[in-house]
Length: 369
Image (cartoon, rainbow, N blue to C red):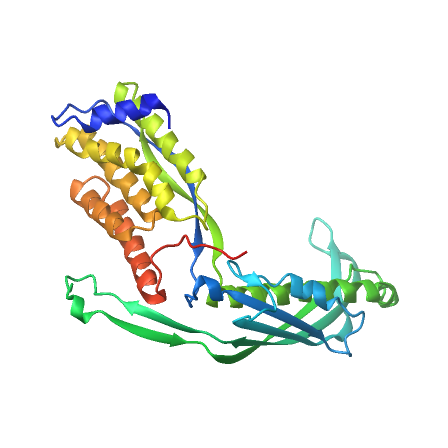
């Protein structure tokens, strides 16, 4: 953040008297933030170790490389190792077969301007169907203890806090099956369609086998990361910027640009405290606008709207839903576009519930990989 902006923010936040709002329009400004999708199980960092074994049944033609499948099974935030893994994944491709082939046809009619059929003929194509099936076993050896915090409805009795244990020791299995059909191009005779099928049979099988393997890997990764992984995700969100030629408009443009720069440096595996510290002068600036423009005219309400809205979004992506809710409620009370305030409150309450249910306090957690 440049020294000029820091100085201006310091001056503005020190201002306590009300000012008349400049002529105000609001423009959207896009910002990107990175965070993690949180898993069901909050496993201690040192225990996030997994291993994968892949086996290919002998009856599968043109045998795929088992190791290449193993290498692409990734639990985000975990370390792949055979040294004391707490999650062991066994994948067995049971079969992939060409189940059926048939020649279909359709009648084509050509008509003149009066709608009379002047020519009719059939077109033929080959339809091949394939099925694949794999069994996946996931063995786990960990126990998670989570603290149950006081609820958010004013119950702050420390003696009502408790802890619960979520155990995942054992095994779970699931299957990954897929059936697909492919069609050849159309021919004027069934002989040509059959000939084309035979000519391309080998390549079609390999293509569909590779497609099924990708489907298998995708499903296994999705299943594992939903339970255990910390998959990074980038989200675009909107801040509102004042479109004004007066000094306040330029200051806010500088402030919003600074917010964008700071969020662009955010990493899903970096503690959120680093980003929060950098944002403190910007937070103070937006907070100062609430008191600087307290009047009920439309311009003042718009400026306060941008302050509440921007702070709500900033706090939400700083993993501070309680503060975001407060800003959302302030946005509702401000009276200009209450729906945005309701949306901030709803999203923040959902995030609070996710933290409580899964035992996390942040969507920014350290990684072993």
